[in-house]
Length: 282
Ligand code: ATR
Image (cartoon, rainbow, N blue to C red; front, top):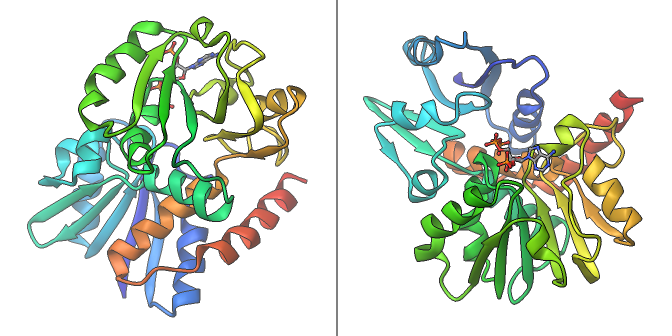
C-alpha cells in the first residue's frame, strides 16, 4: 500500500489524516496516510526514515515548511515564490517540493464560496509566511488591485518589491494599516496570525465595500464559531464570511490530485468534515 504522511511539530491535532482518508475512500484509492511528529532538530532525519520505509509523499506543516524548501531537490515555481513547501513527492532520488496553500485558498474562495476575485479590489492583511504563500496564486486570478497591509510596514513593502514582477495586470500596492483609511475593498483576506492570539489587527473600520467578503486563513480558533477577525468583520456589517477550513481541505485536494492523479470531489467532504469540526467543538 502506498504510504503518505503529514510531518510537523506538534502534529496530534492535524486534520490532514482524516481529510486524506476521506479522499481515498471517495476515490477508491488504496493508501495509508499518517501523522508523523518530527523532533524540532530532526526534520530531515524524519523525512529520510519515512522515505526509507517506502513513503511516497508527505505534507509538511509548522514549523518545517521553510526547511522543506532546502530538502527538496526540485521546487515548483509556486513553491519558489512562496519560499515554503507544504508538499513533498518522493520519486527515486528526486524530491519535488510544491506549495498548494495558495491554490487551496483561491479554490475555496472561487469554487466553494462563489467569491470571484477577477476584476475586484483585494486586501491581503499580513506579510509573513502565510501571506507570501498565497500571493502568486492570487495574482493568477487577476484582481484589479491587490493591497498588502501589515502592522510592520517595511515587511509589506519588501513583499511588494519581491512580488511586483509577478503582478501581471494587477495593480500591487503595500503599506501599513493606517494607510487603508478612506479605501474600500471587495475581498479582505486575513493572513496575519492575530486570530491565533485571539486578537484582531488594528484596522480602520471603513475597509469593507458594500457586499464585501471577509476571509480568515485561520480556522476554528474560537470553538467552531467566528474567528476574532470574522467576528469583527461581522460587527462592521459584513455578512459574507469564511474561515480557513475550506482552504485546508482544498490544499489537501490539490496534493491528493498531484500524488494520485485523481481529483477528489472536495465540496462534499468539506461539508462533512465541517459538521464533524463543529460537533467536536461542542
Ligand atoms: P505566518 O507564517 O503565520 O505568516 P509569521 O511569518 O510570523 O507567521 O507572520 C505573522 C504575521 O501576522 C505578520 O504579518 C505579523 O505582523 P508583523 O509583521 O507586524 O509582526 C502578523 N501579526 C501577528 N499578530 C498580529 C496582530 N496582533 N496584529 C496585527 N498583525 C499581526
